Amino acid sequence: MVNFMREVLRRPSAVFGVSLLILQIVAIIFAPYLAPYSPVEADALRSLLPPSGEHWFGTDVSGMDVYSRVIYATRINLLISISAVAVAFVIGVPIGIVTGFYRGYLSSLVMRIFDFIQSFPVFVLGMALVSVMGQEIWNVAIVLAVLFMPIFARLIRAETLSLRDRPFVAAARCSGATDISLMFRHVLPNALSPAIVQVSISIGMAILLTAGLSFIGAGVRMPVAEWGLMVSSGAEQMILGVWWVALFPGLAIVISVMSFALLGDAIKELSDPTMRARR
Amino acid sequence: MPILNHWNKIPRPLRIIVSRLAIIVPQMLGVMLVTFVLIRLLPGDPALLMLGNMASEDAIASVRERFGLNLPVWEQFIIYIKNVLQGDLGISYFTSNPVLVDLLERAPATLELITYSMLLTCLIGVTLAIISVVNAGGPLDYVTRIYGLAAGAIPDFWIGLLLIYFLFNLAGIAPPPFGRVDAFIITPTQVTGFYTIDSLLEGNWEAFKSSVGRLALPVLTLSIVNAGAMMKMTRSVFSGVYKSEFIHHQVASGLPRRVIIKSALRNSMPPIVTLVGFLFGFLLGAAVLVETIFSWGGLGQYAVQAVVNSDYSALQGFILFAAAFILVVYLIVDIIYGLADPRIEV
Image (tube, rainbow over all chains, first blue to last red):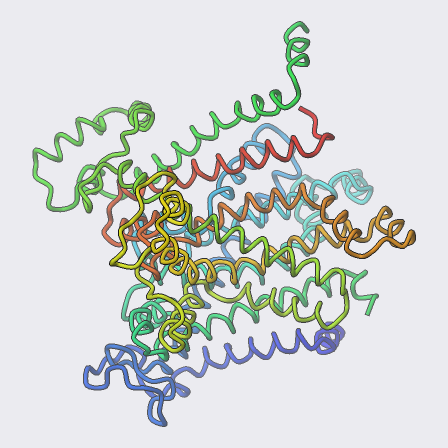
């Protein structure tokens, strides 16, 4: 673990990613102390004020403080994205391992279904599912979990297929290991690393999708502080030259997605011994 | 095996096309199953949801009758397939038009947008990929890597708004973000549905200039964001080819760099064709967001309207259309791939 941290600190891009991540964790924990105003309190008299000492990021059309909302939105955006990816991981990994371990009719049928889900543009399918299920925060998370689950299943399955005929699996089988123990104690630990890299990348994708869904009105609803929704509430004013309402939440999205992408890159390099040796 | 003998006598291109066409039938059935199940997932009465809360008792009864909602589910699915095959996708209660009419009317706008976006995305993506591979480790490589990282993190709807702010509001170079042509211009008569082409066909220079101007920002938005991913994927293909032995041989023979790049690019083409197909499908999804910002009046905006107004027939129609479109794109890609790569077995 200490070694791991040392390796991370040796890469400037990884350090940058981790510091952006720490920034978000601070925003999540200390939101009530960092935000000078309530994230949902509207004040019609203070509508569309430009950034000033009093309102660092200005106010939006209903007079809510943009800075406070950007800080608080970190909670909801990361909550949705991380829980969606966690669910996708927890369901996708066993499916991947079982379909990779037992190659049969059923497992190739499951894969065909996943192929099919993945051939749709993610955003179109996400939009349809959320609007059919009802525009609730948890529904957005469930839909994202459904959309991401095939990615993890596929990665784990590919690894399992290449591992299942290796001598160490045969050795374990000879010493009397059951299928369950073969799959989860012998194959799984060796098959996990691409899926773990994918977790970080998927969280970033989930943040973008959540924001996009809210932007078109198929996700979280007002007055919840959510980045995509905030950009959308500033979209009309942007044409009139009011830039601050949409600019800052958008920047928050960029920072957040980028931190997870950088983290994913770092994990990928560290989990690959050949890449590590090259440095 | 007499059948197999006959099959092998058919010319190869035809074999590729026929065998690939055969797959699209079950795929289309799958798509219809998905769109059917999607609507059946709805809690509550589908008839009520299709018509909206203001529907009268008679209307609900007639919808029940038409869609056979009192029949077993599999019979309903067959009725749905029959309706779709006859071009009946239901009525949008928001526009009160048949959904198919609405979709066909809006499709050219979206296709024009994503076609130009795809061309620009490929141009930027492939160029940057080549630059980064040829200058591997150099400052240009570094810059393209940063671009790739940033482009993957930027929401397209946000960059679109920034472009509007900077280029329309501040600099005043871009036309206003409202639709496909300026309001005072007579839209060209529909031939291809692409305003840029139709206006040229009838020599309507004003309409051409206006539609190109209106296309600039949304196309730029989609390209900036997607060229990053295109670059990353092209780079991994191209750098593999660039390290292969025939390239080393060309370098050793002292061929000019331009020729080497060209032949490396030619050999990276088949995977890039697949990427382009994938990108086309992806852009259709991305267009949903970008059309909303630029009031584009295409399929994407129609879909958003459907979501916001809970217009489920329209939404179902859009999903079906989008899926069918993507299947056709993949079909074309597979056929081109098969024709381009003689190693593919049919």
